[in-house]
Each structure stands twice: as C-alpha cells, then as structure tokens.
Amino acid sequence: MELTCHLGDITAERVDAIVNAANSTLMGGGGVDGAIHRAAGPALLEECRRVRAARWHDGLPVGEAVATGAGELPARWVIHTVGPNRHRGQTDPELLASCFRRSLQVAEQVGARSVAFPAISAGIYGWDAGQVADVAVSTVRAAAEAVQGVEEVRFVLFGEEVLAQFERALGEGSSVRARGGPAPPRR
Ligand code: AR6
Picture: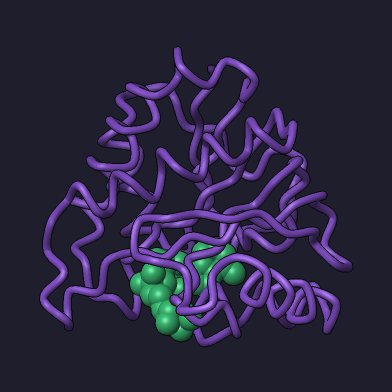
C-alpha cells in the first residue's frame, strides 16, 4: 500500500473513495463534512437518510464507518466515519484508530482501491493534529496487510501545520504534493 500526504480540498480528490469526518447523525455539519455535502449535492444527504433508516437508527457510533455513493463528487464513494470528540471527553486514541481501520475495511468491501482521508477529529472535535497524524499513519500501516484491496491511501490536509504533522509521521520523502489535483489552499 502506498501512503502519501498533500495539501488540498478533499472534495476535489480523484480517488475511488473519500472519507468524511462526519457526526453520528450523518446529516451533515461544518468543516470537511459541510464541504463534502455542498460539493456532492442533495443526493448524498438522501443516501445518508436511507443508511440511517436501514441500519443505524440511533446514529453511527464513534469509530464506525459506512459507505454511500458520492453524488456529484469525482470520487465514487464517500465513507462516513465519526471521530471521537475531545470536547465530550472522548480522548481514547483507540476510537480514532478505529475510524481509520473501519474506513479501510469498508473501502475494501465496496471495491475502492484508492482512498483519501482528512485529518479526522483535528478540527471541530478538538484533537491535536500531531496526535491525529500519529494515529492515522500507524493505524493505516498496521492495517495494510489485512486490506490488500486498497492499494493507495492519501492524506489530504487543509493547512500547512497539519500537513507538517503528517509529513513528520510518514517520514521523509513520502509526501506528494497536489499530484493531479487543484492548487492547494494557502493560509
Ligand atoms: N478538505 C480537506 N480537509 C478539510 C476540508 C476539506 N475541504 N475542510 C476542513 N478540513 P473537521 P472533526 C480539515 O472540523 O474535527 C463537522 O461539523 C480541517 O481543517 O471537519 O472530525 C461534523 O459534522 C481539519 O484539519 O472534522 C462533525 O460534527 C480536519 O479537516 C464535526 O465537524 C477535520 O476537521 C467533526 O469534527
């Protein structure tokens, strides 16, 4: 499995599946969740409603993941996962690790070979970007053998500071910037 990171807007990423840092309701929100729903259009919310009705009546639990289509996005699937919310005392890194692991398992189940992740929980949910990067990289590396259908994982980050943390976690030379994507956002 190839792991890379770069600056960018995940909604524009040309991969089989993008991962959404959602909340348990799956009904949209701010941050990357809001951006994904805006870019995908109303079909995504409709699908999320169906997923809730069919399988997750009480909402998607923290650390769990589920796939839908991707509406008007270039990706084929959106994999929704719910990160732990530090502001609610959800400080166990295993919950965050579970988001990355379950998302990869779901990606493999639907047949996605390339997957893009944002920095789950590093925004509104209040986790330190360095800790998110450490958990993300170690979890994806540990899962690589078990999810051989997924050949490529890209971490798509929304700011220089978060990017620097993922570059550090991945180690030197593993970052590929804006490959085939739009110009990265500058802050
Ligand atoms: N592309 C890539 N990364 C992005 C984008 C984008 N378009 N937009 C934001 N980020 P957050 P969380 C980065 O807050 O902490 C929502 O309301 C952002 O800079 O989106 O898991 C949900 O509905 C940060 O580094 O997700 C939940 O209620 C990272 O994505 C809650 O927020 C994650 O920030 C989830 O909070």
